[in-house]
Image (cartoon, rainbow, N blue to C red; front, top):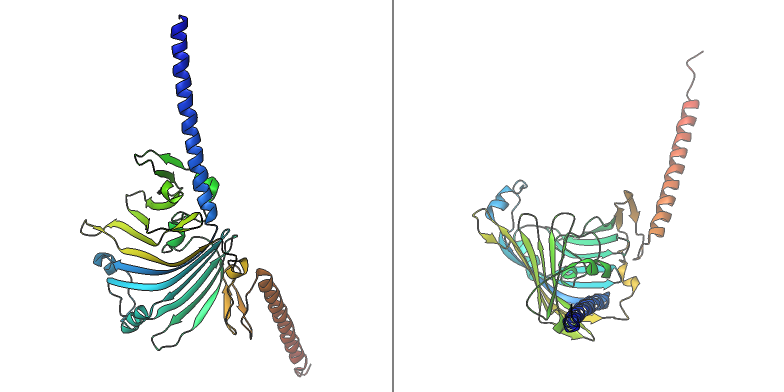
Length: 353
């Protein structure tokens, strides 16, 4: 190899090396920007209106178990509610209140409805849930309690739309989770598409837009048989260095009994107010203040907890203290009962022997 040929080979090698370094740097910057956007969303409070539009396959409805003589909701209907979502470093709070029109619809069908529901999830997976229901007689009882997170509710959408978790997941997404996802090649230079397959065979695809400081603009979850859920974020508003979607639309695409693609439920979330890194969003906001005189159920230990005469929150330490006191009282009562029985038996007259 002469000197000129050698220099040409060196030049080509240097060009290739420069391209590789440039590509790696670009990829690193993109991942860092996605992680930075994700970090900004660790303190958000969103006030929204959520509308659910139902288009249920009649064949599916016909196979559902029916209660004797109980009226059924329409297969095609729309329900709306006010939704407030708060998130702080792995702690989440969902607060939903049904609209008056939707309440009137359920009343017209002679069916009970959930008027209001608050659910909080701690960073350790402790769930508190308070539900108020409107019965057909107009009464509004409340009930609630505690349990450990096993799975997120399948209809919850807003946290997925923000990129805080994946559909069907049992934990929040971390920066490491995002970093481990595979990048999918695409033609639009403004988009970065990440993909991951979970343990159940579902494929998750997330689209981040550099023009919106790498906010999530599209999410899709495809199951092993081809059915999928997709979420599209639009109408973004900028708050500091974070873009929050003004409109979120989630739809499921399934093949119905006639072989046609059907969207059984379409969720539309419209943002009314949003805050990022809000100083008022503090950890105490993620504990429910339970109504006075309510009896709660702890599904983790199968214990019943009495709130008492005043509205108050309950920590696990409070629960353990009350349960221990209740069990001690029960033991004391059992001992007193046993003592009375013993005394009664001893006072019985002898049989003459």
